[in-house]
Image 1 (tube, rainbow, N blue to C red):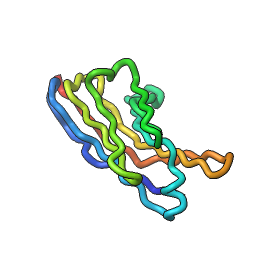
Image 2: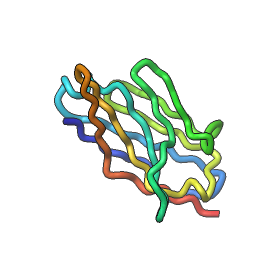
Image 3: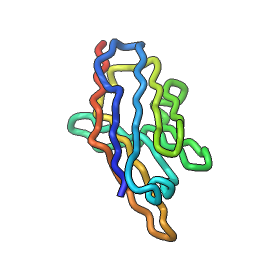
Image 4: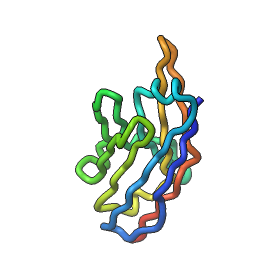
Length: 121
């Protein structure tokens, strides 16, 4: 089992920046089994979409809408961050952290509670 806690959301003006952090906790074996961490977001009335992910090998994927503006980093085995620059009103959403563990052939996904980001125009 892995527990995820996000922090860093808030209200910012368009063009501003925010940094989100996600800390994982749980059994050492589970933490060491995390092979992918990432950020997703969900705006009101819309589905939850990928923002950025990073694997334990350092492979990164970004949504086209955030390329060049957002940067994901894996600070250590327990923490992932998302630096968001040049924010736009359309970035307003609840941002969720996700961790995927792989134990032998079995994969499990864990989600945080989410942190609200509001970008005013």
